[in-house]
Image 1 (spheres, rainbow over the protein chains, first blue to last red):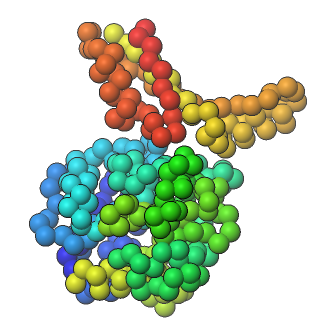
Image 2: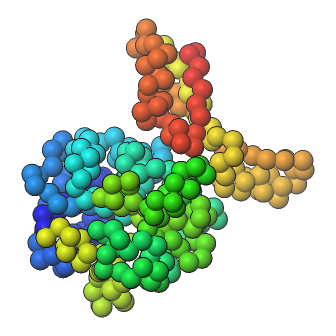
Image 3: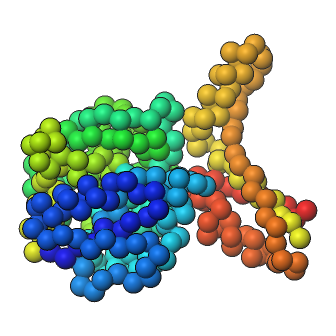
Length: 221
Length: 76
């Protein structure tokens, strides 16, 4: 599986994501700087890491979404390549228009940094095929802007099309309908606030995140 | 020329920061603050002759997220 991790100024989970991908697939991802206008050829997976790119200036993910590499990421997503955005990566995907809605300041105003229980709402995606539908998994969150907001029509469409992939089992940040992660209509772009890359080895305190990378490896070779 | 862009949250979008500011005003003893909405102002120093259409494009492409925000352009 050929993969790349995009590195923005202020990304801080890029290495974690690369280590997780390599640990499961045996192949190290290319680390692509945000100013590169082109991606390496033949990528199966493009991963956007967590962090505070551009210091969250203007809006979280807003500046990164307009960086040169993102035009290439949008084009690759349009070709059906897998794109995974974790935390700040999810914010970048919404700002880039690859996923609907927006991630606003947490309703409680606090930075939330702890393990949360998630329900796997859709185990039929290339990202979640190694989870059981309806399973409860435990994944850490660490964010200030994870409060998912979209209009009622968009929320209904996401629910109706099975595009709410992960849902918090209890309110964490004020997210509409406790949404923690969604996919695009094509099913090849996933954004989620929790950090699966932080739980791939027993030494990290659990392995509930590993199945996501295993599923991608199985789907993408 | 200069332009000022005022960005506000759309009505109905929950503004937790505005609500916290309102609560803080109440805590300071200011009564009668029914609601507070926080926005932002962006001041642009532009080449003379920049059209309002161009500034509008700047707003749509970057300055505002029209999913949750509205904007108003004033050429000053």
